[in-house]
Image (cartoon, rainbow, N blue to C red; front, side):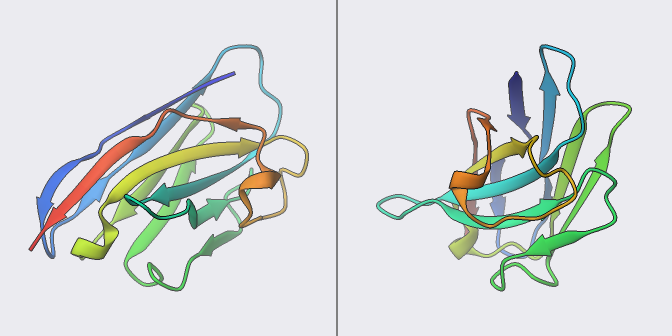
Length: 125
């Protein structure tokens, strides 16, 4: 399974970015997807997650109300829409999938089976 994250870049405070993560490779079953981020010298932290149907989502408190996650299963792609970006959002953003429990949401990195390579988001003040 390959996960290709894209959409990162450099923006000003208050601007928006839309990331995407496309899954490919062997035929995939149902899976939930999580997004995490890692800033320099910090541990990787949970950002958002979405179940297979898209009916349930979960957000870290730090992004709640600013980020929205959605998915298009016809394209095997998940899209975090990030609005009102702040310098504190600067990090490498990673997507990951969980095929074991596609209808549940987890915030731990240990719950996810496959990871993408990451895309850098830089928010300048």
